[in-house]
Length: 87
Image 1 (cartoon, rainbow, N blue to C red):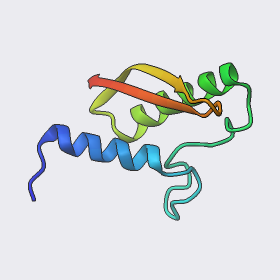
Image 2 (cartoon, helix red, strand yellow; image 1 turned 135 degrees about the vertical axis):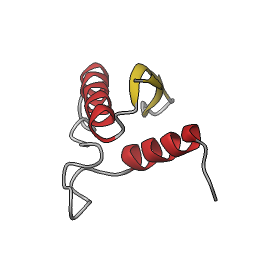
Image 3 (cartoon, helix red, strand yellow; image 1 turned 180 degrees about the horizontal axis):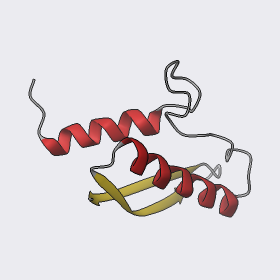
């Protein structure tokens, strides 16, 4: 199946954000570092935002992160929504 450029980028981002750093045998820094998990919300947001911006520019250089918005559920779990634009 031929993917459009947008679909290809979304797939790349999904794979990148869904991987945990250290899981990929040939590139241990691929994926997100989860050390933010036990941090207070504001610290976790800052750490995760920095990680998303850095890893996006490294592994998907065709786009740049334009914003990251967080929502928290009743249990305090943070969910980031990442917006990107062409670099």
